[in-house]
Image (cartoon, rainbow, N blue to C red; front, side, top):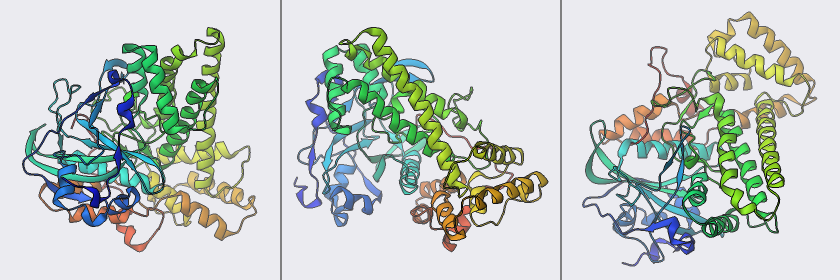
Length: 486
């Protein structure tokens, strides 16, 4: 079958790594695929013809029935710490069909999630349900619009099959695009189960793929440093928009610095630093407030995996270098977060009492159960919509101190407004809005989801059309909960 007219330009350099790091795959065909949604804007970026996205040939790709020329389908091997416990994992229901060469010279992974059983499936069926695949589509595209590094979603296709989860659900496949799917867990697998030569090959491949400027005898130390910097930046961005990943296992930390694996993720409605949305995170390991700490914990596991490659230097010296980078991560993540919080408050410069000003606002938001996104949006336009705050004398006092601090900036009101509008989104993918879209989709109505995606496309527009989507869920709404393994 000829796919050249669609724009596919696939290779698979990952297949050049030692064969111990992956398993070649064949297609796992489905009989009655049907396209649910396709991302025309992303298709253009990839060099694909948007007009061919709904063609029978392209549908065969999205369904995992056929692969374009140049594809070398494989499932990646990896391990990881899940909730602190180490286990063997791997792509149990995902197939990397290849790497697309884009018009601007980038190389991006094209992966099918829910494409069937692989050698790493363990007892799983290798498939995915429609709801979670649409959920990842919505949230990942929203994260991209918010300016947060992330995998993206090209398409969702129904398989025509029913799969058994909590009930029989429509099966679906997500076509996911990422800079790569190399994880901390990929290195853990190579370090624990494979040879030092295999680990070195993986590290060299990763450097060439993501950090081509790294060179010299300290290249593996520098790989760790650059990875830590990207994670510091990524997690700071999560915190600033109130995003809770939900399952920060080491196999869900991408070396590229992108957000991947949108399982039990959610956004804060009311501000609660201990917020947990995953049904299985009973201890709050991956709570909102813990994300920076867990990022450092995961990086420590990455450092352990890289350690065998540092045998050209004394052990104490190698350990000291890795520990220094971990300390840099902590400092940088906090610095980026604090800079971001100042900007959310319209502050261009740093002053000694800014930390206290920020902490007091968050304490007031927590005390009065104020909505995280809407509080900052209200401050942007100096129109406090949160009644819990507007009726609080303590908040009035804070507001007065904040306005005094703004005057110290020496900036015009327009400059401050422009900064705050660009840092405080009008809309986020509200959990109740996502659920409404998914409920309609499961009934065959995709219009609710399409409208939501259109609204989320430019979260900093602060338009009239977005206004209805800014509302928090009704007070009577039960606590939001998400689930893994769907």
